[in-house]
Length: 290
Length: 284
Image (cartoon, rainbow over all chains, first blue to last red; front, side, top):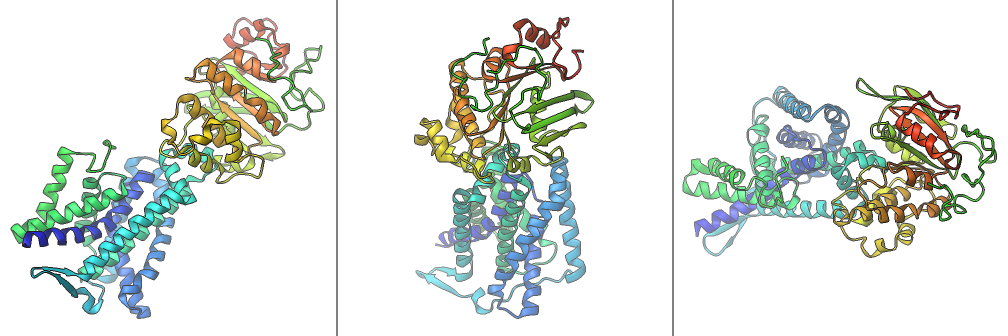
């Protein structure tokens, strides 16, 4: 029964990973930008939430109402300035720029918030749970996060397939020069895609801050890698692939932990490497894109 | 090679009827025909470099309302470069581009679309993962006011209505070309640039597409096209402009140009009076 439990916990953790991964996947799919600062941005969102809560005293659960728009604006601005400037040069330049951004963010956070860890206090919500049968206990928080992830993915899918800007984002992802010739300023569309990606990573950062403590270094050490693993396992450029990838990663980690507590992270990466070897295009991918 | 294709004449903007007014005195210099109003698009002294290579040197042309202006020339003559520069994808090193009285030489491509210059790029360049209808909607996203909308495009190409939910990637080359034209039309261009329409298409398909030109002109637009197939260009065009290694070698109305002059300009043969057009330098 503990194995079943491990799988259930793994699936729920996968929701959080999917939240981390979908923004990464979106930015790669639309602008071909591999954002190495993605994990740090989640941490930034966490600290922004800490700051906003300290100033306004709103409940931590509702901090996303302010943090998400702030991060979306930041995403648009960063895309239109720094990342766009790098895009004009080469793919390698965008890697270097986002890597530099990651270093700057991490050290900036260390400077302002010190290396001490913070978390978002949500009171008893963090430990409340309900039981299924006698051995399976499901905590509300991971379940809520999983549901939020599914809602975000559904919303993104609906936005991309049915709205005017969603259509433009797909058009620009297909062929940005042809989009220009059709009267679309692709830089603006890139900005919107980045804003959405940053909004999702803000949600992920807040969710993570509720689940566990965070410090300035965790963005690159853990979050970025989890997001990458989810994207690669699920398949590049596929939204639902990130949920599948996140879920597979989560299950692998929980089963690893079931075998031996210290094997949790290792098990996740073993699956990640196995997918890279056996199915490099990812579980949902049609063909290799890199 | 005749310019007297009845399918086209009579349809080309009644007021201006270019190609029909073949004046006896061979003076086909631009702006020479009165009654055509002011030029919609004027290119003056355009010089474009690709790195070290000079792709265009000192090319000038004027488009009048209702014109079908064909650029001909061999591979590498600079035809596509000229179109890419007019639509804003390439930057000129010298010269100017005017739309009506507004200089647009440095304007970004997407702003030129809003101003009324829309290109159907070489190789169609549809958005493959979007449906036919979505391709048209992207074209209409920042459109000018005007007669064209997706519905009107479905009237022009009847088959398209039934297949509007199909992905563009699933269409044949000719169908894709039609969608690409539709995507440009819904932006309601004043000047429509057509780059290598016939590339990779069967002759019968090319003819069908050219047969739609009169209907487009009837809605008041002006066409600037690049064509590999010289006889096709001469049939369709009201003015022809020949490039050779980036320079103008001939400019005039198809009816006034003898095949031998066109040939001389096209291949850069020893020039036997092929260059009386008064414009541009002679062949190198």
